[in-house]
Image (cartoon, rainbow, N blue to C red):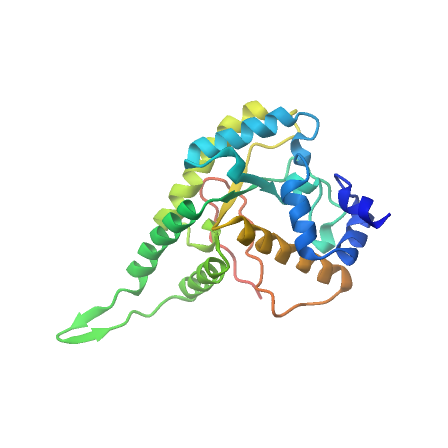
Length: 245
């Protein structure tokens, strides 16, 4: 039955190919966010509750505002060419925090970096705008593109941006505490994340990833969808995102 496919907790690769064709990206996004315990803690749901409390305490939000997405939730990579790759010790725990206050706070802190790199100098009475480096232009684009969708992504900023350093610094502490929540030696303690302005924005952001997945299965490229940022590999201070060709 079609309905039972959407209700299946951890679809395999072939079921994912069928799932994204039969249901809207939004329906699949709701499934991932609300339907079940993440794969990484599938046999010990209490550890998911403890993880949410740990993240909530670190960022001053409620545990119900904390979600896990990506391969740690689904049990496999949600990128078309890698759909057969199951969750492993090479994967991070990708965390999504839904909080308008936290979103606003980090956007404002990010604007401080933007102010610093775009601050004009004065030659007498004449204002001179600075010339931005290509990497800075790229960061501005990534940051503004995500923020306009109601998502704050620390990896959209350069590694020396204070907002990014603060956010990943908190997640470094969460990663250390998460060591005690692991199921076994083959589960990871690296935790990365982003902040959504609202649950609606979180669903729309995840639905965009599901749409990309469907297009990848079809061998299509949707130019209307913004490119996904390269994933961070270090919970503390990931390297600057590489140039996408």
